[in-house]
Amino acid sequence: MEQVKIRNAKVKTLYISGLEGKVAEVEASIFQGLPSFEVVGLGDSSIREAKERVRASIRSCGFLFPNQRLLVNISPAYLPKSGSSFDLAIAMAILLATGQIRSPYEEITIYGELSLTGQVRAVPGSISRLLSLPKERKGLCLVPSSDQKEAALLGVSVTGVDDLTGAVEIVSGYRPNSSGNTPVSFDEALPEPSADISCLCGQPAASRALVLSAAGFHNLLMVGSPGTGKSLSAQILQGLLPPLSKEEKIDLLRVESALTVLSPETLRSLVRPFRYVHHTCTSSAMVGGGRSATPGEVSRALHGILFLDELPEFSPHVLDLLRVPLETGSITISRSYGNHEFPARFLLVSAMNPCRCGKYLESPSECTCTTSMISSYQGRISGALLDRMDIYCVLGRITEESLLSTMKDENKKESVKWRERIREIWEIQYRRCDEAGIPRQRNGECRERGLGEIFRFGKREMEYAAMVAHQMKMSVRGLHRMIRLARTIADLEESRDVKEDHITEAMSFRLPKWGEARGGNDHA
Image 1 (cartoon, rainbow, N blue to C red):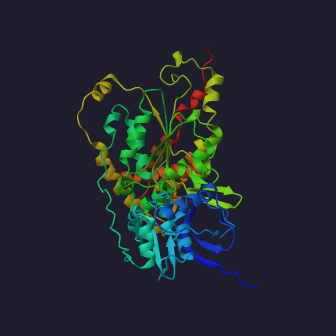
Image 2 (cartoon, rainbow, N blue to C red):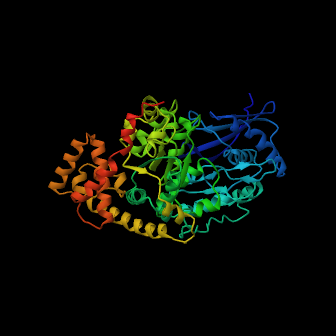
Image 3 (cartoon, rainbow, N blue to C red):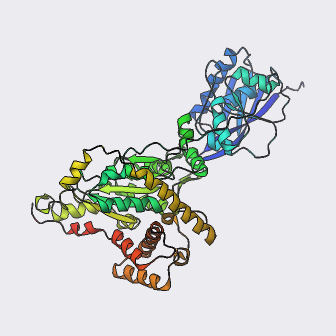
């Protein structure tokens, strides 16, 4: 019996699962039989649709599509895969299997989406894909041309291609493999803040709270009547934060690239993210999820600000999902085929009215809310979430003189000066972490044991802090957050050790002065 000859070829490709880049193998086999084209390997509809894109692209570039039984397998076949990044690898494996091209390279790694005319398009997830490449690899790595900038940022050597014809020429050895990448230059100078801290004239407590929040990366809750400047304060806080470091930038780009193709402006900018989340946000949009487990808002705010305005209007279930990432700095999404861990180190800034009508603090006599209405409104925020806030700040109505000054353009740039000062404070905190032999982190992020020794509390100061926490009926978490805030206050005053005055000021910001509003009014 005559043996049926089977022609095979394989190339490697890169895909993402959650935020992790993974290596897959694309195998193409051609059998004798009726013409057919099948793609197996647990791919979703976008991979199944790749058959038509690949077929049209191969023919558009002047190559022959096999008129036999064609089977493409993407392994490992037990892991689900999605996206259009497999197009270029499938097309190359088919051309190698049919013998239309031959390659001198032992190993070929390639990914990219194909248009119907053979153009190679960029796909989301470039950063994670490139990070999954072995440091010591052999062979050829082809990526869409636009991904060369990401590769340069990561220090990875790849070759960019614009179309299938160019990819074939490089794989065949007819065109030299130019793997050099142009380095990416960051925009070191941050743009002018959209709102300056001088706009908070007449709100000294709010200004102090913003500076402390930025200096130690402390979570902030602002309470005040409508129009007192809560949303403005959140925008001001973004302008106080120093630029991203290169490591933080790469962490953030991993998240953003998993959701969209990165623009050149996004690659260059070192501005920390500011995510303004609407109260209609769902749980999967907040912490991540979906069929293929994509990052949520807590991950997109990585190393930046997550701003929740009108906090009681959020679903209590959505708010309680923030409790774990606020403590651990990450969020785990579970699926039947495995778990995905997303980074979630962010600065939580939230704002709320004291009651539904918003008049309780300013004009209690005009407040139309009953006791039960106020309790119900404030009760939508769990005590566990409130316990994770480092700073409580009440914003009141400003004076007539302050209102007049807001209409004058005096071109003050106090936020820029504070940004430089806060950068110095962060360096102090990093050096203290180096001396203690712990990872570099800001005061508000420190979860290490022995905070008293790390933050240089004397015996008397530790006893005072414990006494204050006991009288205020704080939890252990609340005590630790007060300790972290006191350390930041001491850093701002350039004090090596924490004093009782620093603890007292930290205690004043831990007191929710609006809490008496739960008593409400009995009118109405």
